[in-house]
Length: 262
Image 1 (cartoon, rainbow, N blue to C red):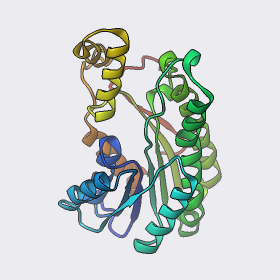
Image 2: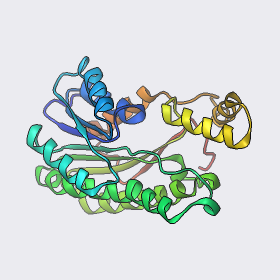
Image 3: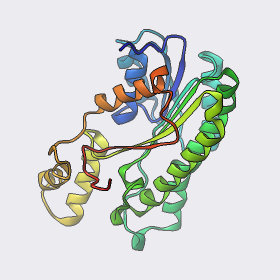
Image 4: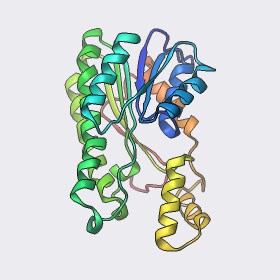
């Protein structure tokens, strides 16, 4: 099967590392022009250079904080000006504060809302009507397994990720007949810096070795392994191609079978 995204423009957020980077890298290798963003100029420039080594088209680095509405607006304007109208939007975000309900402050909730609800909504609003006019568009939100199965130690993410699933269904229902697919991916534990950092935080809080935490998380999957970011990236490239046309309004759990719910 040939996945050819030549002529398409993709915007992938929070893509200097981890799952965002893997998605951007796969889209670039499939022939799309790709814009990536990060809060750090050094990180996003380095990531763009790495992706460019195997890309077929231009890779544009952009500095943007997804918790800032002005940054989102300016990023969209820059990408449109330099690459063209966005055909593919992949929204990955920084991780909100991780804590139970009893410890979460109003500021924590506000930041989580900006990152996990407002940023995806604002980005989708910028691009979806143009996609519908051109009768081709792909919107993918990178959510979390916690949007499917709540985790008490991560109340903010569990709450807002579930809301993102609802946003996905609503956009999909409104725009599906005009060539736009909208889906949310709900990944479990992957081999990323984020998972490593979260595991270290949990180990410190519980006073247990890091490897014990990683082993526990790994064993949640029947395959007893973490996901590989490049595998998720390849799936994203498929979903963003014409082959992904019938995936619509779906929360796709990618967790190695950790969630037992049918």
